[in-house]
Length: 325
Image (tube, rainbow, N blue to C red; front, side):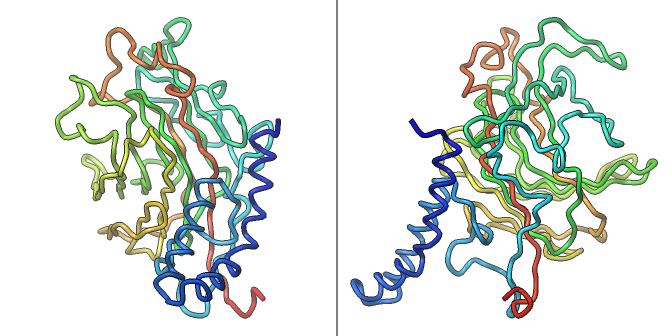
């Protein structure tokens, strides 16, 4: 029986077929609309199959790259998760290493032990702690994890991940943030933030957060943060299938967001959004969507229900087309 990694590698052979599909569309169907339909179907098959791509995930006509430019993958911020362990040259799962300090929002503690590679995916599984942990006066009873990039991204780059959310009240996320800098206001770019389950205790404004593409730009000023956000509904609950969540950090004054390769909305910050920022994948608890008193699926769910799965993470920079040949 082939493994998930073997299947994913074999499926990369599909990348030799776009030209064949396009020519078949012209000969058999004889019109441009049919050609576009063929290519859309091909892209959807590749996305579903986890095919390693030579360019970002865009539906036909959605690629925003300027004329004369091509996308070039940034290896240190891209991963197909085909190994057996987390690549320590790219990622850290220790929440407080390398100058970071956030180890989770009570009652959910970040622990590196909850991050595993399995069948070509990075999996973060939530559960109840064996016994409560008290840290800095806060009590932690449950656990998730955070995975951070060791290298920063920057304006002009495109960031995307293929992710299936867990089915619990805890989060599934993909975002970037600047490193802590001595009290200066940090910049947070949330590409996707959702939950797996709403309950009777979920705050009214978050009742649809289990079926959402939701993004933020947050300037962590004091005493009040400045938050700009936008969202769109997804066709299913986030935990029911994989979605591709992407963002083009187009410039210091605009970020464009994409869902399954289709442009969805933009957010324009009120300050210059220029500081190098690090990818974050946090599975956390929220006070506005608390863990049920009986623990809910965080404690009783199956492994799949309790696990956020990242099929891949990719970052891209623009290069001159002539130089890339």
